[in-house]
Image (cartoon, rainbow, N blue to C red; front, side, top):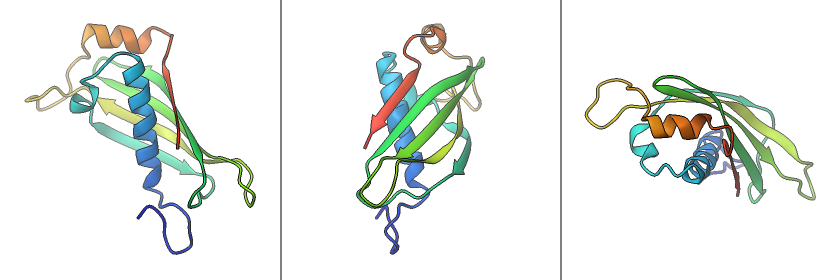
Length: 130
C-alpha cells in the first residue's frame, strides 16, 4: 500500500517515517503524553530522490526551535544503498507542532518540564531505521 506501480514509495510515506523518528525523540526525553497534545500545524518537505520498495531508510529528526507553545523539528530521510541505488537524501524539511491540551481551542505554553527537556541540549535528536 505504500508503493505505486513503479515500485517506489508514495511521498506520504515520509510523514510516517518522520513521525516514527519523532516518537523515538520524545520517548528518549521521557515525555509520554506528547502525541495526544502536539498536533502538526505546518509541514514542509523537499523531495530529493525516490525511495524504492524494500529499500532500507534512515530518518533523523532534531529539535530546531522551541517557542512558547510550538516547536519546529528539522528532519532528513535517507534511502540507504542497494545493489541498484546509492545512498541518497530522499527528503528533508521541517515540521511545526503546537501544544494544544485536551479541551483547549488553541495553543498553550509547553509544560515547564517538557520545555526543559526540549532545550536541555542533550538528546534532542531522534533516529529511526526502517
